[in-house]
Amino acid sequence: MRTNYLILLFVATLSFSAGAQKYITKTGYVKLFSAASLEKIEASNRQVNSVLDGATGDFVFKVLLKSFEFEKALMQEHFNENYVESDKFPNSVFIGKVTNIKDVNLMKDGVYDVVVDGKLTMHGVTNPVKTKGTFEVKQGKVLGKAKFTLTLADYKISIPGAVVNNISKTVDITVDVTLDKAN
Amino acid sequence: MKRKIFLALAFTGALFVTSVKAQDDLMSMINQNEKPTVDYTTATFKSTHIVIGQSIETAPAGNLNFIITHHFGALNTGYENLYGLKQAAIRLGLEYGVTKWLGVAVGINTDKNTWDGSAKIKLLRQSKGAKKMPVSLDIFGNTAIYTTKWTDPTRTNFFTSRVTYAMQVLIARKFGNSVSLQITPSWVHKNLVPQTADNNDIFTLGAGGRVKLSQRVAINAEYHHLFAKQVVSTKAYDSFSLGVDIETGGHVFQIFLTNSYGEYEQTYLTDTRGKWSNGDIFLGFNINRMFTIVNHKTRKE
Image 1: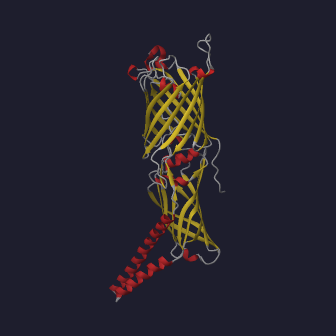
Image 2: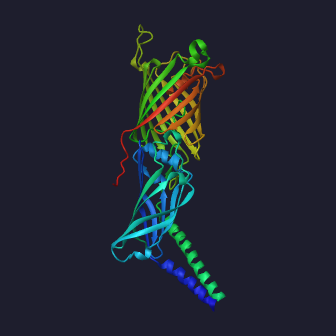
Image 3: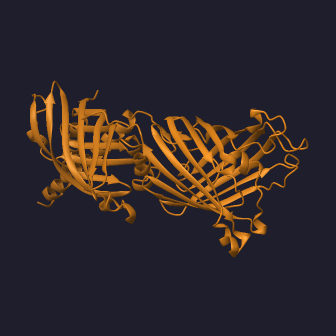
């Protein structure tokens, strides 16, 4: 009898999670920015994939590193070839959760403060990332925005001695995604 | 009581499992939704030259590469000649990326004040993903005109006698991150050759490659075989060069040893006078400096 309850509960949780509204994009925007004494480095990626589960707050991102566009072609080549080694590690993945999803009413237009907590994998290294951001609910869409800072050394991305003063040891990441309801 | 605890534990377990599973589901949703992308191979070589000859690389679109090539005299010329340091052949070149598939270049050589102009067209790009291509393939063509005075002004000289052409097919493949190989068949046409026994059309077959020692240092080698009975009146050898690439931001330094004194295709392919076993080896370097002329504008903000 108790086992039956258990199964019932299990199935209920599963179906609850499966039936929830999901939000998706494949044209999300991520910007890298790093300012150092000599060189300002800026790159944009407009092909970011992301999915949000409206009920549980589960939030995942997948970023193809070769899709970052730099102002200087040489910077782009060095980014892929020497720093993130995109041949070996083509994607960066974030798997996390909006911890206060209960505070967001996805049925009602408005701007909500959110906290996103999860794990970011890049260059074969995974680190915890926690940041504050906003969700703007607008006509059924969710516009997510956040900013956070990464330390290159945490991801075993080394800067050669010759340019160590030209390149900042941290990178500011700006995330801007417009998530549509998934079918 | 025990059962209740068990039930609670099982419930939490189920929740945990579903949460991880949900995130996996979201990730597989991304993977299904993802646009198929073509993953083009980049940086097969660090420079537009493997060592002394052309690589499949061009200056990126909107970028200008200033290349200074310098070959000292032969190492076997002894102390009196400071092992070649007293002599130099120099080429100054400018290479511009018109588009991502077209590069143009112009250069001036101290050898007979020769001007050379060239174009390199990228026909195939090595790629994987949505479009699979095993190799990159370029066509390279150049025209060289020497501009020193006629050696014999008493005879009838034609301007066309100053002009030579070279055409190459560059076929390269990058194996993983650190090894790249290139095959380079070449065809050189000379309007005027020293003797009738010499061919006006000369064919060579070359191969080159690089191995990266670190992200910024690579070892390169390049060889061009000159098929027999084409160059008869002078003794020409196969060209072989061995070098190191050092990359520092906007510069690539290439330091090498070669048995070719000439610095453009027509000379090193058909007129390599040095022989490695005799010590007719020239120390040389290329300095590549890349300038961004047209920025790839970041569109938003």
